[in-house]
Amino acid sequence: MTMSYQPSAPGTETPGSQAAANEPLSLIDRNSSIEGTFTTTRDVRVEGMVRGKIVCQGLLYVAESADIDATVEAASVTVAGKLTGDVTCRGRLQITGTGRVSATVSTEALVIDEGAFYEGDLNMKSSSASVSGGSSVLGGSSDDESPSVLRRLAGSDDSESGASTDPPRDPSSN
Image (cartoon, rainbow, N blue to C red; front, top):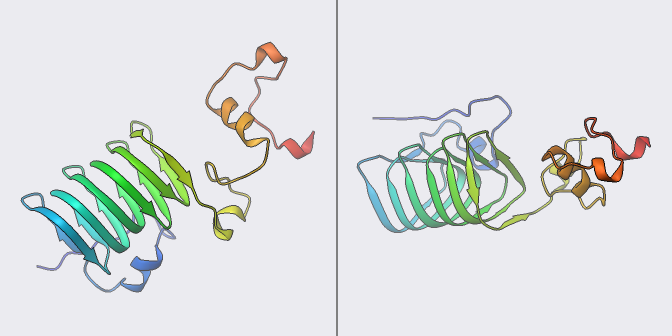
């Protein structure tokens, strides 16, 4: 049986998955459990249980049925199930609406969908790709304005300071 996984949106390829685009992914099915170190140069989909360490050169996809308690090193990670431990992601970490992450995370980009759960420490790494192009990456900017913009986006009340309740604007346009 050959199984393949395609990213849900065009342009979401990761360095590891792009190189292995014609190769099937590795699969740890829901009836499997691994204790120890799992290493792959391919994308990997985990539906079962993993305890230990995962080293993945491509995309690690944690399915809804997955339960992972491990140290994870991957190019990109998408979590729809449960992930606990330490995560080092060279690209983007996405937590879907069904995902639960309790971990110390180091990543370049973080996407948390509505309904997702995240608890832990977060270390945002910047790269020239994530800082350029006008798109903001959570924690990826060292501008002094970022914390106030994040407070406004989070819904804090700045009315005491006389600040407008309008949506955040570019600070350079003042």
